[in-house]
Amino acid sequence: MTEVLALTQDLISRASITPEDAGCQPLLATRLSAAGFNCEHLRYGDVDNLWATHGTQGPVLVFLGHTDVVPPGPLDAWSSDPFEPVIRDGVLYGRGAADMKGSVAAFVVALTQFVAEYPDHDGTVALLLTSDEEGAAIDGVRKVVETFKARGQAIDYCITGEPSSKDVLGDLLRVGRRGSLSAKLRVHGVQGHVAYPDKADNPIHRALPALAALAAKVWDAGYESFPPTSLQITDMHAGNGANNVIPGQLDVLFNLRYNPNWTAEQLQTACEDILKAHGVRYDIQWHQSGAPFYTPEGPLRVACREVLTAFSGQPPEESTGGGTSDARFIAPMGAHCVEIGPVNASIHKVDENVLVSDLNRLPGIFKSLMQKLLVKPE
Image 1 (cartoon, rainbow, N blue to C red):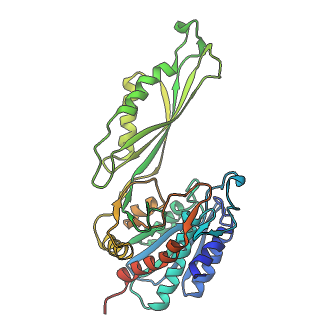
Image 2 (cartoon, rainbow, N blue to C red):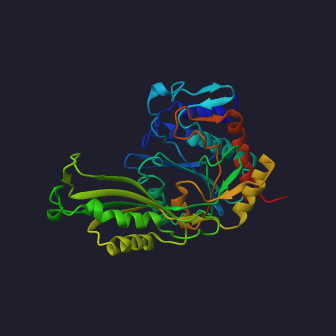
Image 3 (cartoon, rainbow, N blue to C red):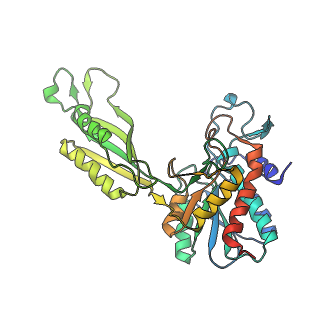
């Protein structure tokens, strides 16, 4: 059994459902400390964060990950206990196998191997882990970045181990992410009897033209590697279940995934202008979970492209698709951020899994990236 496989299984066996760490970070810190890393535990609220570094100079290369996992769902739907790792036909099953305990284990193996081989490497290599990526993401990397800014801690390059590959390991390099802006909209009306609509004001009728306009709006045509901005209405609720009562209010949830053509403030204004233009009486609460970021061509993208091409035999697709990741908190520090990880086909699903062969290759990918970025050619 390889070192990375054994460590991944150990991590999976710890039921670290957000925001619990379940001892994952102390386990990893012990390994890293023994390899010469300086380890700092940063706990905010109920969230554990680990900051481990080797070196004191720039550039600073950070591997970013999380030890928390989503709940497994109905246990009887799984082929085996989600927190008892099992290998069947060359595939490792367990909650977190792909998202992202496999990558976290590969980070640690690669880091310890790298500093053993290059104890006097240039710059600094670091690992940042949180137990609050799958949850509210308030006391995790977001809060750590606030601490870093107060200290003057810089980050030049950030590699996140999120499961970004599509069909085979290394076929996709994530070079940015769209922003995410959510809204809770409440449309006000006047409750009344359906037989007397003149004595009521139906908020559903009021809202439908405005919601149709929001849904139909073409926000932009995309931005460089980014797809067009998209608005999706995700939930609507009004009334008390009676078919003879006009409701007094309508609650609507919608989300915008947006590219750098927009700021959150501009989108908020544009949406509310549409609501006002249709005469809707409303209250709205906005929440931005992350701004868009994009890593331009530079040393990090070049290194990743070369390494992934060498491992897979062809250049990776370079994409900004997908959801969000904790890199959204690192990018505003001025860091170039990319994401490289296992195939994402099973993440958050029953019987989450990763190919053992892919898992065994991950440390080599991460180690090669450190060599390209922090080791001077002889």
